[in-house]
Image (cartoon, rainbow, N blue to C red):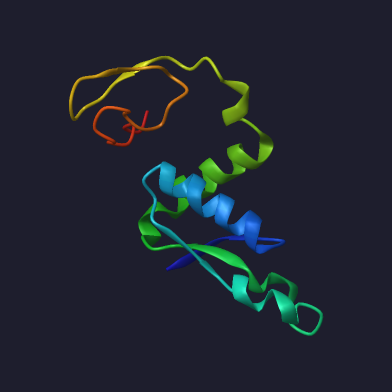
Amino acid sequence: MKKVHNARHGAEAHLIRGFLESHGIEAVVRGDLLAGGWGELPVDLCAVWISDDSRFEEADRLLRDFLKGAPAQFPGAAGWSCPGCGEAIEGQFTACWQCGRQRPPA
């Protein structure tokens, strides 16, 4: 496991975890339940970790773009075809509405 992000609070950490998982990168949040002790504990105790160390560079790049707002700048992304069922999906969606399969990486 490798740490990819120190969060300011649990909500931020879970948002980042969900974002990474929407891109097929398994992630976990650690330390979010210790928020009550933040006055006495180190600031970086709430963090997002990825399970597969070999995907660290990809996760880091995606996260940097996400935090800069890059995904939000492309709301009219090109449509895609689901590799599972062949359904035509509009570009803003990350999963197939028909079968639930995640959008393949670009």
